[in-house]
Picture: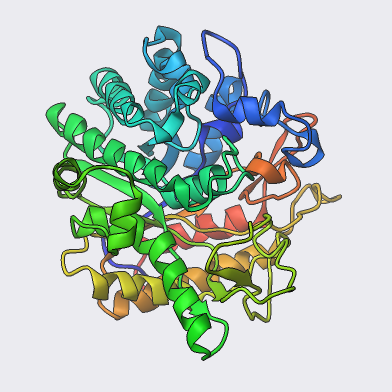
Length: 456
């Protein structure tokens, strides 16, 4: 596979999933620390207190990342490490990211940090979390502190990660932190995250940033049948989970008057917010894993477990299994063509779509520990990544400008509420000893990247 000149390959992680050091050096609690402490919330009672101990092992981890030849490493700052309580800067937290950024640059890897990857300081949640408009302004303060300290060395900034997933699972449902379970009453949380994005872009620009984007999860949504009720249910779900989080950024408006009314902001203020939210971006991050199928709820039908969550009654849509010949060990459908489909859909919907970076794509397979040969053989992950990179090529040939691709994830880590069972990494982690082993997929990715610089 050959990609256009300048195409950037990377790997991705997030702070809560890898750092550990949950209460060291002034770090405060996050909503995920609180969530994990509640019995039954995370599979097998797992938590992120140690995770993969990246906080202490970052130098070793940077060496693994750099040796693969990737140009970019996407990670996230821990808000409660940098600004515990959401108000006062913790110098020791900034010191850690100073060391990490410097190590990456010394290894020839460009740091691509995300400001917010779901680990809200618990004190801000206690004041309403993303249901409170003030949280957006607190994120702007946090962005400013990071830009002042690290802006001389960071070229690319990502504001927030997967606002749709955070809103759906954490506020609409109760399967992720902070487990609010509000149903459609969670829409204000969506708007305040979008506002935080707009404010962060403004702050970063003020501090001289020239490359700012966001990471949104996108996926095609298909109706389960040609039945008009199923078609309508799929359109509602598609609008709520895709366009509600991208239209304000890329068109400066919400996709539906009912959504506009549901975000809980009066019209004049909302128009001012949307102007801020819709400010120009330099790139647009797309996270992709699988498509979704939806039908209108059928009386008496059990929908539990389709999305690994319990869908409350009363919603106008219900998920059904996606038809697929293959699935990951997490049960997710493997449909590479759906990545091409969503990328071309974004191009068609948004006339001024910024250059796209695939900011996450990967798969969980329950890889065995290193065998007698010392290797971790993961041919299914190699096949998955190969197929999805071909899907990216198809989108490029269809006219979508895609400037990069980041594998999720660099390392096996804490997969949120699924605990440590689901392994997404290119690098195997023994969670007992913290020993790292490069999987066959790591070597495959290294060779693919190296081949880009050689003549065909």
